[in-house]
Image (cartoon, rainbow, N blue to C red; front, side, top):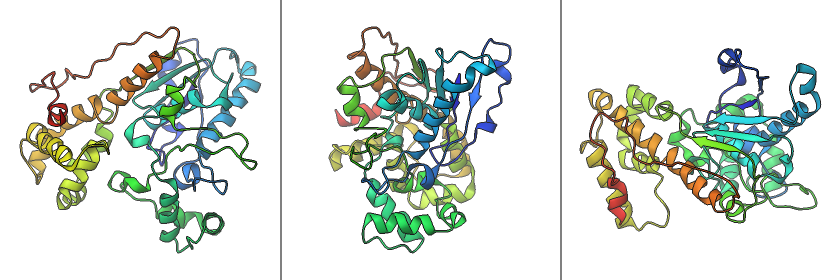
Length: 340
């Protein structure tokens, strides 16, 4: 079993996940690190920096497993790739990549897929340009950007990364589609993940996908519980709240505002300026929403539904209504009703 750690593509380490719970099983566990942040996922959208370096590090680790795991008592013909959060998204990306064929035989994605909204890559070039500006690099063209970033002090590059990435989502580097070319003959992701799924271009292997309980607390609890972060949220309340809802771009302003108002009324009890006491009262509800909706479960179930249409044998059970909430949680989602 090969584990890919999470951390929103910018943090985390394999050493944070000890093997204790697997030691009683007949399993050989492999964990590894991979490049993160600007070093792992910066893309200029062309040959200068195709991106996905973190994914390619993971592929190298899987190739090592094929060549060496038998020495450790493992079976190279029975490899399960599994991960959580952004690590789960990486697992999914490997399922979509033509260049990891035969490197693993089963997959488990816990709370993340390549079509999760927080894993999207809408405009890699603008993100690369923004990163270049932060370290005083010219943005005249992509070759200039990449050459300058390579010469920049690594410590400085890391320091310019946002301390709270979810407050600066336009600067969170993620996996991106690559273009095939002479300089890049083997693009890791040869197209948009959703297009690849619709075309049936994914590995037809056993796959478990789902959501972890309380996974969303990683994002919400620090923001609501720390005075500094909560004050920043309150200062830009509507902007940050809407960003967490990941509203589809196709919504009109009236529809988007309707969803926002429904969210405020139902999940935040009409509150638009959160005190610490408010935060304690709504944390569970907000975590439930993110786990069951915008961040984790809905993207996963959407992926299942799309892959089911292209798979010979794939059973799935999807439920969108969380039963964890201590307050009433109607089966008719109020946010859906807002745009119907």
